Image (cartoon, rainbow, N blue to C red; front, side, top):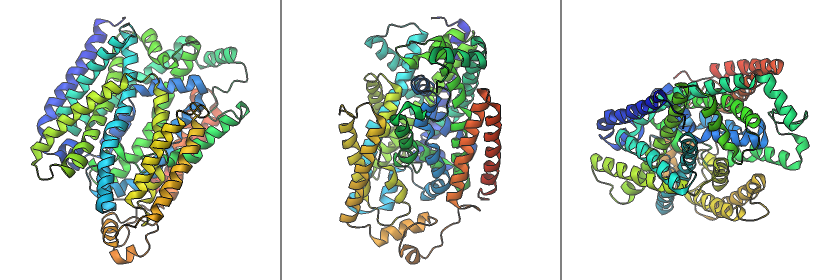
Length: 573
């Protein structure tokens, strides 16, 4: 362990700050579950959007990115870069619809859109399925990343006992804080965490490059180690690497982004949409999230990953390269800040998932099916108990994981095939609750099979190309062989949401309401322009940092034009 007293003081200071913030907001969070889960629906766009960014920046993210770069070069990041397309879709097509729904959780929407026993079954099933196993798998890999960092930092033996102790310490801090503060404490610490994490990751990226001699030396060393024709710095997969590289990239851009769960912005992203002040703040929050998530954060991580390939060329666990460079290169004080940033990132993601998961268990299961008439304080108490339950299950789950990037892929595959249903439920009257149930069950069952077959076990593209078509076929057949939702339910949903366009048959005329114009530019055009803006900004910054100045400036010029067009088309209210 090479922590100085100053480093330790910074870490302890942040823990005390977070716990103090939890105590400060505990009274406000205890008023009712509306305050506990969505902050009274009063968040400004910049706070809601920054909270979205901070939640997706956990201790696992830089480590997973490092593993992807070491294995597949910069192009390996298309595993998550493809989600720009779904992020912009959520921004311009769905963010305002979510806010208009005025629900507490995205699962609650099921009983607005559908009706009867199938809708109740879907709501209860999704509350338990997402709130516990899916949620705890996500938290498991976040805990795994923090565990790796702390084992290296404190030079602990990599044994089961050490892992259990580290997990207990991390979860107790995050769990106590989350149970006290509710959603207000979550978003405020997210703001602090994002600032600290960006400062720390940028500092590590700069110091790592300086230590190795600059970007020119880095590129030279990579060429010496991997040959002059290596594709590590390519932004697109190397077509000469074979059909599998091309197929995988095709799956990323042609299938994964629209087939994945949450393509309409559900989950903890939707939770922040519900908490925003109004529809305009909701759209701006989601737009800011996607810009910051994809253009501000990746390059410091990628640069450190490239340096780790040179400094530690033969690591058995490539994901460990990031914290190893951090411990070796950062000076006193800055090391403490970076470790605190990791702790803050860990807490911001864990407390979000604890709070969000508890919202499902309480609002969509306990309150809906067991105690619909209890008072607000009763639900707050149950919410805090639910936080503790989820915390324990997530901690146990983390002990059975060993690869963060592998867990990412497993969760993507587990939910593949659900996304198209989630898109169409907003725009096609024929979708019913059985459509969603069929998609979820089929995706889970087929995923479990393909992940164990020798032919597809470690080939992500094959897995997606099997899961998505089968799931899509099953839910489409299910849709047409089951009864449609009643006109009464569809009319009530249409009057409340007022979607702009789609295939609603005679529902708009029966509802007797006009759709609300979402912006001055058609939503699909804004989706194209917004996606182009984010990708060109991402690639422009990357090319400049890697010394390819002509290409970098060209990308940024396109980003300037497309960004200006998006800005002109934003809603005025």
